[in-house]
Length: 445
Ligand code: CMC
Image (tube, rainbow, N blue to C red; front, side):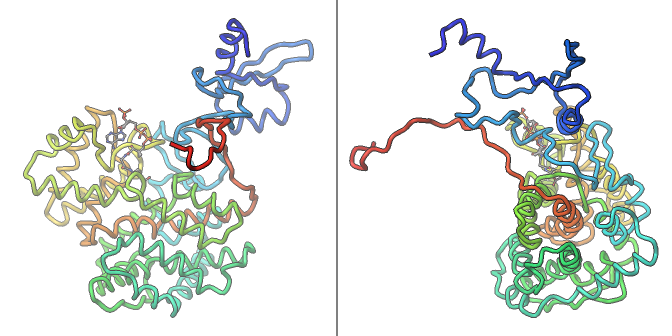
């Protein structure tokens, strides 16, 4: 039992642990890379020493960290926790900037195709013409879906959610890949290309089969964006639709250590296979707090339109009920998501071209209220929704399309993970009871 005076001292100290680390040690450099806590240099007899103050638990729960399993840091939802080092994307939440391998997303959206971005993410830099041609050829060679997968696709219940169907189909895809269990770097690259190549055909087939239509075989003479729209509708898309859709794919291809990418890397880090890891990524993306938000945005816009309410009134009423407005807010961006700015301009251009600026005008009104009332800005899911709607795409395909594009980012992260793998295994702060004893079943309440 700790005496009361010491107990008070312990409970204050328990909030912080002070690590004393030589200021010039390699360890300090490592630590500095992965933490952003307060630090100070203190002179000592042995030279300057860096002190790092790390919060370990709330003052109200000053338990023994070993007994309770408390980790050295505790961040709800892992906010701001740096879990690993990556060279793939920089998401700068304060400046509202997003870089893929050093290239600004605005530059890429304007000047690079999805195929070029795929090379950039997988290889580390933009391809020259020879490399681009090679990757396009690899994608073309992998377009056809394995025979066995058609049996799976045709047996799926029509009423199922396309995201659940896609998750099942990508998992099944692994069963028809002879290299599924080969975890060599070369085989993983080949499998990544197969996944990227085949997901568009899977999504298009899911939509056609559930609507009683025959799937459309892929073309061998067009872009990834064009091919998806063609397989979906059976018609060649116009230039503007292809360019807009391609830009949407570029914008969704990668986004650092978001929930689905983290899920994929956690699975990959166990040395499970790429199909399992991508399936896990799709499962995480499905949720409405992540990729599932885009379809909720369109449903909301349609509901506002049907009800005849002013968008501003609708938003205020929802906020008064403490409900979330989908397509707004972001864990990292505290200003406008740069992808949303690009999509906003595209939505305007699209509306002007179609002679209907209704969705755009409604969106702007909602944006103003969200900024004024909550200080929240649109994220990538807000304007992409009305763009896909204008393209005539079924609402429940918006999240599968997000996954279609993100196969590039997930694959790049998995290849990076496996190039220097370590099992990802954080700790939970145990807050449950201890020292309980098993009573005979007839004596339990
Ligand atoms: N509408 C209303 N209130 C919101 C919203 C929103 N969209 N987003 C956050 N808030 C409020 C939230 O209610 C909370 O308020 P309070 O402190 O009063 O309870 C506060 O802001 C902080 O919310 P949080 O959930 O702790 O913040 P977070 O960083 O964990 O959440 C988020 C990030 C994206 C989950 C959240 O902003 C959200 O739920 N947005 C709506 C769903 C959405 O659009 N998701 C797509 C995210 S971007 C693309 C992607 O990842 O797929």
